[in-house]
Amino acid sequence: MKALRTGRLRRLQRGVYVCRADEISPLAVARAALLTTGIADAVASHHTAARVHGIPLPEGRCPEHVTVARAQRRIRRKELVFHGREMDLGDVEIRQGVALTRPPRTLIDLLPVLAETAAVWAVDDSLRRCLVNREELLKSLDARPGAPGDALARARISDADGKAESQLETAGRLALRDGKVPLPQAQFRVVANDGSVFFLDGAYAECKVGLEFDGQGVHSEPEALFRDRWRQNLLVAAGWTILRFTWWDVVHGKARFVESVRSAIAAVPY
Image 1 (tube, rainbow, N blue to C red):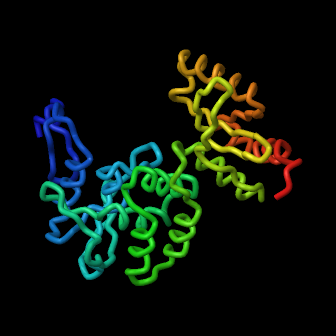
Image 2: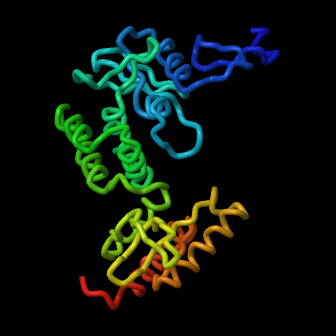
Image 3: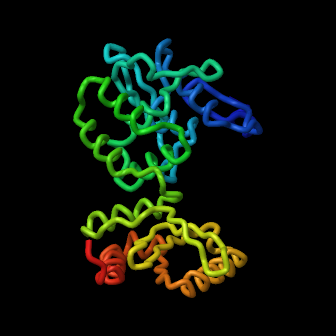
């Protein structure tokens, strides 16, 4: 096709093309996935539905996902994954003519197939943004016939607290849990000596030990660095010990991270 060779068209799925200049939204990608199936009651699900809902996913390209009735003939393609499972009432919503799983069902489908930290962070972020609530997730899980991944999905929901504001905070909490260290209070409010109000990513208020998780984004900007130092000085003046950690510390130096926190709170009885 000349339009493809010249770059004027872009292939989304087999038999589905768009103008390359057009902005391709997650909903358009979901629509293309459904169109290429040729199945009237197919539903965009898993990663494809998650992107429409804004549920965080690991970086990198992956195939699109659709769910169809078990009896439907399904041929897996490189760019499209079929799932055979029945939908319950309330599992599906229609958005601009596109059928996709609602956020609770989308998360339940995703949790068994994502790595632990990514799965719990997806729930944390969705709970914090009020995209779902815990009762909805458990109800969606209980309403469908049991499957091997359901127990894992239930565990991921249990591990989420809905307060983490970054995947790094979620990773830190899971690392402390694995290390049998008491979990800190998330987003703990502190009033400094000058009246300034701050929120610590994690805090052990009894011993005034605070945890700060510095991602690569906003904390790396010069203005943010100056603000973080000023904030930390005020907290130290108020008697707090502040421990700062990066993704490398928590993920690649997990044992050292856990021991640092354990040592800082060692004098406090629990």
